[in-house]
Image (tube, rainbow over all chains, first blue to last red; front, side):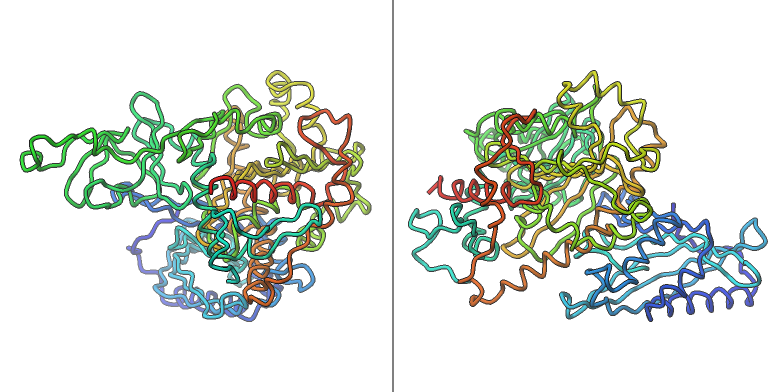
Length: 173
Length: 440
């Protein structure tokens, strides 16, 4: 479902930069826990999926399995819960988290108003019960769609580089 | 940890950790390294422990690696369709034969020096047979086998103790309930995806007890998803038919909580089981088992010691049957495995939906699960200091109703009309204590 590859076609710098700006802004909203702001960047048909991997024989390739697979309604409910202090224990006190992305690759699609942005993602987060903090690492494939002149996130697939995870995953990647 | 040297549980001179009359359990049961060591020996090496579902290893040579107690074992389907369980350790120098979680192999070949084995553990060759003593007895060097391996309707269990009673006998009358959830169609259930796997810093029993019969935590721990359920929000006073809800405990060790919906709730607002399968359940299950499933809101339970299940029969966003195992890693750490199951006969579309939605509530990123994990870990942190070990945990809400089971309940075991008591949890801990003492 996620294809890691080098883009053969170089998109114009302006598109690449605008995708970078979007990812920076979007990540920063999450770092600041501005969940309303982040939700406003999503399209109504958002598909948000996070997967982990199983350890298997190298010849068998990659096998990932979903740990989060949400449409708009389920994603909104998930975010609403962690965004509302009275409705969450896992995120109250909240995770202190910061997102770092790199190795961004951008591809145009058949839709003139859509591009795909690939990135490596690392999220540091500490919590009362994880005082030294921990890292999640993964690969992201995002579908960005231009709506009223602004990029919005229509699809995010994250494949984490983990087989056994820790605690519970209560943050947004 | 506050355990005295002469009070090992296996010596028979230990102090009592579970007091059923007073409804209390000593904290050491959940944090002591000595207790944990005794559990591994007297429970996880003596009782039937869940390993895998048959559908996870569908073809000859398919295997998964799992924990049987504290030991890594390989569960493999042979060419003849039989299942074998073997300790994941070469007889030569101990190297793990399988370091992957799952795969497919014609035979096991140790990567270190090439010793090779059949699926049933028989030694084929040491790769240097001509260098071995001519009288070497190959049959004495088979892989270490799990002596008892049985499958109950697709659920494969193993036991290190060859004298354990048959699995069907071990499950006993609880099969009435288990079948209603995990074996209600002719083709049975299948696992839809690799299990979620995560670690949490709490004792395995905390999860087992919560899923066995903890109705009290729902409104506090899970205030979030309950408040955000759109149908609940739309219908103030959504009535759980409390009068019909029951807490069941069978033979003091396996049990479940069954919560029911008010009958006038329009089912169309919830996702339910595939309607085309309802007549199939009616054929496969007894009328009483069908009665159990009708209007069921949530069924959740535990099979001693560490296999649990939960199914929301109706849910707005996240209907699924989840199988769950709480693996003992240490006194204060567990590894959780979580599988989603569906009837083989259900449509591909339905299964795809379940895989996506079933993990919304329960799983490593579940909106119910995340709050459970944080609070369970907090319970362990809160018991870190030996100062706290003089003050036991309360299971006292088991006491008022314990002697008053329903007299005419339609299912086996003891049933209570209160799902908000701690009766089944106290019974489970009592059985746990007896089991620890049995094998001194």
